[in-house]
Amino acid sequence: MEPYTLIIGCSVIIICSFFFGEVSKKTNIPSVLMLIFLGIGLQYAFPFMTEFDLGDTLKTLGTVGLIMIVLEAALELELKPEKYLPIAKSFFIALVGLLLSTWVAAEILKYLIDGMTTLSAWLYATPLSILSSAIIIPSVTELRPDKKEFHIYESTFSDILGIMLFFFLAGQLDHGGQSDHAGGTGIGSFFGLTGLTVVLSLLAAYLIMVVFQGIKSHTKLFLLIAVLLLLYAVGKKFHLSSLIIILVFGLVIANVKLFFRGPFKRWLNLRKAKHIYEGLHVITMETAFVIRTFFFVVFGLTIAVASIFSLDVALVSGLILLSIYVIRFVLLRLFVGKDILPQLFVAPRGLITVLLFNDIPETALVAGFDAGILLFVILGTSLLMTLAMIWDKQRTGRAVKESKSNPVGYTAYQAPRVRETEPEVLVP
Image 1 (cartoon, rainbow, N blue to C red):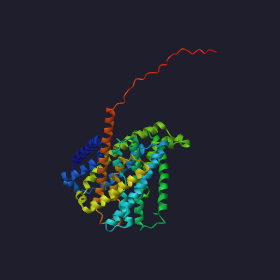
Image 2 (image 1 turned 45 degrees about the vertical axis):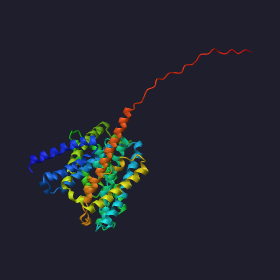
Image 3 (image 1 turned 90 degrees about the vertical axis):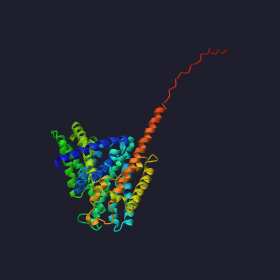
Image 4 (image 1 turned 180 degrees about the vertical axis):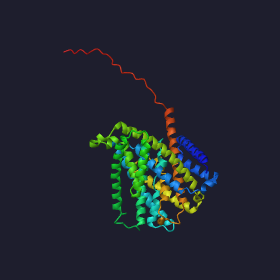
């Protein structure tokens, strides 16, 4: 492909993505869904594009996109006393929802697909149970602030917890389900590594903040992004939960007054820290937009559309979709209350799901698993979310229209008058 042709193609895709975002704001149809269909359309418009091996490109784009999306979400999280309860509630719902959804999906896969063992079924079920922050975060901007906040917290926690669960299961599979006492793949070792990752992440966040406050160059923000990418990649090489590094750094820089207290306060230059935060926030949003755009278009290019029309695929996918929303309904009803719309249907699968499926070890691959299940679940959850968001937008619009048509009236107020009477004369 000629360089100029490639530049034209990439530019047109970014322009389309921008307009998809504007359409999404008006209609609540997720822009990500439009990007996937754009990729599918390119398959038929330019058949030669399917001849390229896009697997590695998809994986690289997804990894960088995931880092940017988690960092973008972390920069939005304010750790204030009044936020602790919503954060804890979101974390609990994300954790329990992930575990229950994975368990039920694993049982479905094990029962209906030949060759699935319990461990491999859990490994395949985990990506199907993770919420996609890449789809949710840009799609909930028009929701009520408390609902928007809930979805940002929940999807971010679901991403991180789901990735940790996936690689824990993959480690178990590599060691035949046995704990490796030298390196350790058991539950104790897993939590030990997670704790170590959190401590190292905090140390790295403090060090980065102190160092970058002293850099006077105007190009230091992309240097900061490069450092974070380096830390993520090195962490993965040592089998650490690298997304925690990104999350912790984002939380530290977004809440510097909380983390730089007491003896640490002398290390903080609030003005410079705020400047780094603002610049990083803009760069992260812009980069996440571009990476997310190309990831979902490339994903659309790699989709085998015919696979979703299989009866077996529809049966397995339909049962998994049903389990997702039944579990979600119970959790939201118990811990959120009656007002659970559209939250009930804001549970799309996307970037993380695709990424982790590409990371399933060869020893765990099951020939009977049809990739159409993956596509069916992603499209099904995205379409249901779209319908729910459109319905919520219409409901809100009707409420606003009704309130405008029935304005609050005004009533003249008159102070009561006191009647003057002659004083009574008491005769002895």
